[in-house]
Image (cartoon, rainbow, N blue to C red):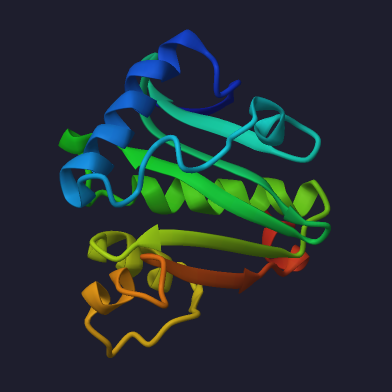
Length: 168
């Protein structure tokens, strides 16, 4: 049985996964997105303003996700990851849905997120989850790696509290 569990981004059992996630980014992008380029504070991912969750199966982490405040009404989703051997099974979608549900409970009304220009599977995931692309989907994503762009593909979604009332 799969279970969601709230964690701190500093939990020891999460570190190999986070390191692996950044390793995947490095393999796709080289130094384009440096791990050190973004300041990340643990408290951003802790309740009540933030959240970091893992999806576990038989005590093993199989997927992760988090959100942090973007502004007073908007949460920013981060760290969506699924175990390589379990991809294409809807786990990331389940994590995103749980993050949205929890963001509504925390008082957020919108979600913002970015993914990289070399992650077409992430673009498909977010589009399938009802996110609105803030970039031209018809354009070659590699163009977004060139100035004046920063390589990030942005998405937004308005959360409807009633959509989560059945699962809250």
